[in-house]
Amino acid sequence: MEQPRTALAERIAEQRAGTGDPRALVGEMRRSVLLVPSVDGRLWSAHSGGVRWVCAFTDETALARFALHHGPGDRPMDYAALLGARIVDEIVPGLGEPAGLAVDIASEDGSMFFPPVTGVVPDGVAVDTDAAAEEEGRGRGR
Image (cartoon, rainbow, N blue to C red):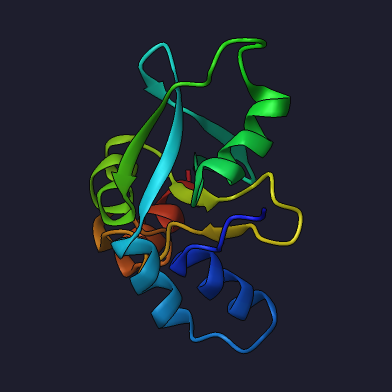
């Protein structure tokens, strides 16, 4: 029997169908408990497009799909259960580089990326703030 979708998975499906409200999606992500795989005590992340993406999953089924391809073989995959708000407000800023949250990346039609922009991550680490733009501009002149 198929497991019912979490509220966040429902909001992601709405957004992907073009009927969702982006603010409601971000709010649901912040309220949701997400499962983040860990290896040797470190949260799983991946680099893509100049951004470090913390990988998280809406439920154990979504995590299991990921573990089939990236897990430690015949052993269970370790993971932490964290609020989405904690991931984007505390963990992402602590990474020291542009970082965002990738949810359900092993679900072909259910993944969603929350990039390091204002409204998703704290302004101090968002890549679209005035401070970030000024810093980028100074780097180009060197």
